[in-house]
Amino acid sequence: MFVITPSVNETAQHLEIELELDDGSVINTNHVFEYRGNPRFTDIRPRDHLTLGGTQVTVSGDNLDSVAKPRITVTIVVTRFYNETHSVSSMTEADSEPCKLPEAQPNGSQILCRLPVVSLPKDLSEQLEINESGKVNITEGPGVAAFVSSDGRTHADVYVGLKLDGFRRFQNISSVDPSVKIQFSLPPVVHCPHLIEFDPNKQEVISIYGRHLQRGSRLVDFDIRLGVAACVPASMTDDRVDCRPPTKKPDNNETFCDGDTLSLRVMIGFSHHQCSCVRYALSLEDDAQNNISIIIGLACTAGFLLLLIIASIVMIIVLSNQIQQQGKRPEAADTYEVPQHGEGLSNDYDIMQLNEIDISNAIYENSP
Image (tube, rainbow, N blue to C red; front, side, top):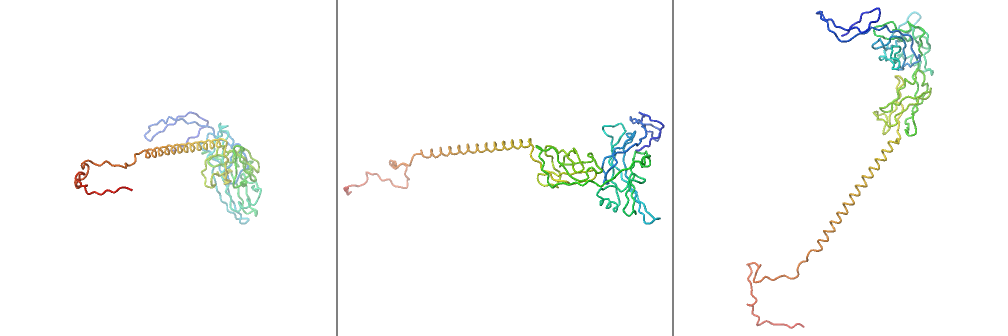
């Protein structure tokens, strides 16, 4: 459900919010409403930005905290002149994400916004890219900036406005303050080697090189990512920006880099650059942990080998005892006891008594 608040002559605080139904009954919501003064715009800084947008701008004024979702808008009015009397105009508008109150000054005197993209027609974009300076041709005109083609047949006027809920006065800040002019530039050029070696034991920053890094952008506009972690921007010049990576190697969620390397991405406003792959050298802590792991591994291996040697010795002793026991067993007897009177012999055989044998005719031979 949406409601429109009635206008009042002055601010009123702590007004109870009640719902009146069709049958005349009233429901108390236990919420209060506060009227605040209308927002007022006084300034916008900085005044040089990128055509791709995403750079931070500070809007100053009063009662800016009375707006629920303040936004900044960029409107482009393109006019094409076909002859002295005939021209055609078209308009595009882009909104930013909701602006925020700065933590340092949350009193409604400032809001922080990100400028939207400046969408230029193709011929003007190509003309801008040819220009090494990468800046707009002129800052004169009805808006905050203007692009004009080299033949003069195409004009693009840029307007910046503020969406402050239903308060419409600052939808075009140029109508309130014509002196506000903004310079728009192409994104900086970033140069990155394929591989960056980073040793947290010896280095504190990773350096990223380029051209015109300060053109239309500031350090706050840089968002540098190393794997899943942030490489915090620390300092910059027009040809170099330094960032502080984590001392411990972060995780990697990208497939751009192979092996144990991490992807380094540089975002300047809405301009994205897949920069390099970064290989971390082992930190002192990681090196110590690796040494401990190696020592533990060696100790485990030595313990296993010791147990194996002990088991082998025990097995040798057992086998030796078994061999000795087999050597002490009695050998088979050379003489046998003759059974008396046929004991132990099978009944299938006849027993011959020695006294029944006739030995009267026995012949004896003398041994030589």
